[in-house]
Length: 265
Image 1 (cartoon, rainbow, N blue to C red):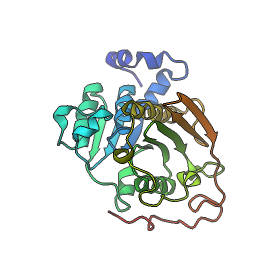
Image 2 (spheres, one colour):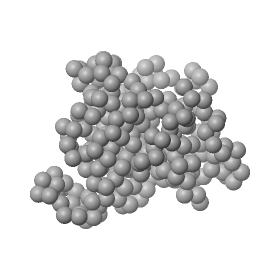
Image 3 (cartoon, rainbow, N blue to C red):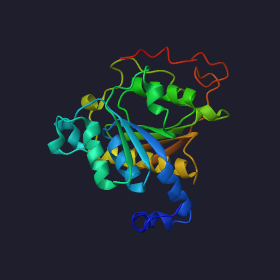
Image 4 (cartoon, rainbow, N blue to C red):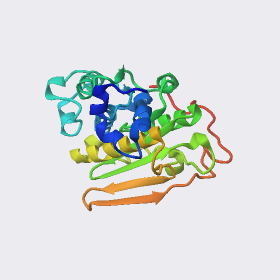
C-alpha cells in the first residue's frame, strides 16, 4: 500500500525497524483486535494498539467509570465518571489515533453472544478481571480458531500468555494452566485484594506487544510459555507451558465440545 505523508510521519519509528518496515506496518493497519474489558489491562492495550496503527479495535465492557477505577484505568478521566467505559475509551482512542476504526460493544460478554462478538476479529486480547470470563473467552477462542493473548494482575503480581490451541500440536490453552475456575472466594478480586496501579500498565503493555508481534508474525511467540512478573521483587520469570494431554478442552480426549458448560448471565 501507499502510505500517506501523515502515516509516514506517524509510524516512522515503526517503519525504520527492519523487523517491521512498511510491510509490517501495513499488516498493523489491516489488523483487527478485540479487547475484552476497558479496565486496568484494557486501557494500555487499547491505547498502545491504537498508537501502533492497528486498523480496527473493538472493546467489550458493560461497566461504567467509577472513581476507584482511575488509580489504574488510565484511558478514563475524572470527567468520565458515570459514563460507559466503552464511550470514554472511544474518545481517548480517537484522540490518540483518529485513523483507527473503533467498535464499542457496551454489553456483558456471555456464552450467548461471545461468538458473534469475536467473529470479526483476528486476535482477542483478554483483560477481564474474573475467572468466569477468562474461561469463557478461552473456550470460545479455541472453538472459533482465534489467537488469544491473556493477561491478569493482582496485588503486585501479573502474568501474560498467548494461547493458540486451535492450531493443535503442542499449543496449550488456558485450561492447560488452570483446569477450571477456583471456588468462589478462594482468589480475591482487585477490589478485595488490591492492585498496584502501575502494574496494570506493565502487564497491559506486555499484552499489547505480544498482540503486535502476532499480527506481524515477528519474533518469538509467547505461546507455549507463561510470563510472570513480581513487581515487589522486580523479577520476571518465563516458564514453559505445554499442552496437557488430559486437558478437557484441547487434550487427547476432550470432554468439552461446546459452550454449554458456561451459563449466560
